[in-house]
Length: 290
Image (cartoon, rainbow, N blue to C red; front, side, top):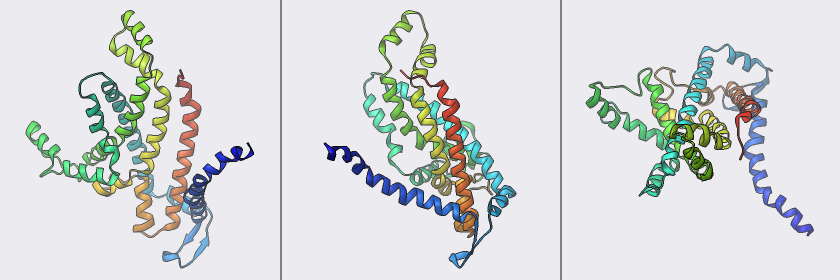
């Protein structure tokens, strides 16, 4: 009996080791480095307090990356949540071949963000891209998706949403299937339209999943968007599509400013903590648990 008591803790040891090695220790190093001036190639350090943070908040390029990140995350998360819910509604219908459709539509989730960026780079190529071809045929225009404003923003949004949709739909399909049929049948008898049943019954009942997905999507768009932006636009044209994670990469590896980059990582972590706390405090009030 005593041994059984300790089994859960023993099973959690590998997880704790990974968390400590790859999250807590790097986070501690970033906090220390953010308050230091670090010479290139680690030739020396000196304590400078909050100077790195003050430099960031007076840097126009960094402030632009913050504004772009807010816009990018808001648009991609909003579109991904709504679109994945609507597609999930179609994929729970009992129609021939629905399992094949589910399999095909989940494929993007199995590829890496870099591959997703490469695929959309090809699709949006102004010369041989399929999307550009359809725009040429339908509207008679040739769009420079990756090198012109505002189309570069649209391009990274397309790729980001496409990559995120399957993850969201997996959860939405499972939760929609758990909605009691009796409730929907009663609403139908009362004369409720499909639109009313969707937004006044189904969507509120799956709100716990929406609550979870919003948080996960924000984290993904904040921290996992680097590969898509790097492959597709490299933050351009100019710095038009440079978000916070790509700005961090440029300062850390391109401009060799590890102290400034560490300060940026601390700011990103702090933003995620604040957003999550606020969302849990106010967003959870709209969640309806069955």
